[in-house]
Amino acid sequence: MKYLAVYLLHHTALQEYPSFPGQPADKTMNFSPPVSRDRIISTFPKCYNPQACLQMKDDWNTKAKMACQDRAARQQGYDRLKMSKAVVVGDLNVGKTCLINRFCKDVFERDYKATIGVDFEIERFEMSGLPFSLQIWDTAGQEKFKCIASAYYRGAQVIITVFDMADIKSLEHTQQWLSDALRENEPDSCFVFLVGTKKDLLSAEECQRTESDAIKIAAEMNAEFWAVSSKTGENIQEFFFRVAALAFEDSILKDLETGTSTAQIGDGSILDDKALEKAEEKPKKKSCC
Image 1 (cartoon, rainbow, N blue to C red):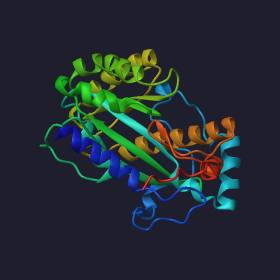
Image 2: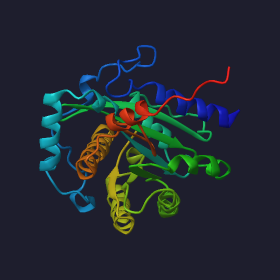
Image 3: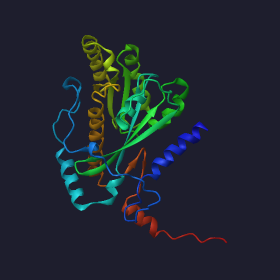
């Protein structure tokens, strides 16, 4: 039943997106609501701490910006399908689910049930005038669910490793979590973030000391570090905006590099116009009855 539940979640996510390019929208399958005002990103989000930043810039990549302006002018329908996948990994009880729920639902619950296997949320944005969706996969921190969760690491554009700032041991485990996630993906294909949660539990002195240790670990992981609080909401929106912006820009640049406009859903792809034309040209097999 657990595997069936995970399949149904994934299948539902695929159904939420419109029809293929060049085809009329299937109203029975397109349940996408409009982008809310607080999900519109017009300027490139800044990093949390310059010492822990891997992308030191104040604006979108020039090529990506020009491509966005061009697509916005042409109103290409398939841009509605553009989506990136982010997986959230880390020890049990470090606050992965609280982190996601605070951003996606703007709620904080002190008591919660441990994630069984995997779960996910889909957040829709408007990036530099274009629609974009981010799949955020919440994975279980329990050892017995690792074999299930690891299968959903594949096809990630972003890996978010989470630790509890009040539990230094969870920081020590983040490198192993990252190693497990990277094993399921192509080398150098993912943005990596190290996120410290429960910042509100630390004094200013403790926070500074923990951040210093985390920045060192982040450098070893080639990750960008953020400190957040799901309870107060501190840095939550800023962090996810940063994740979405980097993933979106990378997706645009990859399209320009390959010369395609294929929309990615995890590690799968939706056919572009040329692929559909070729498929339509193939002769249909005659039925035997």
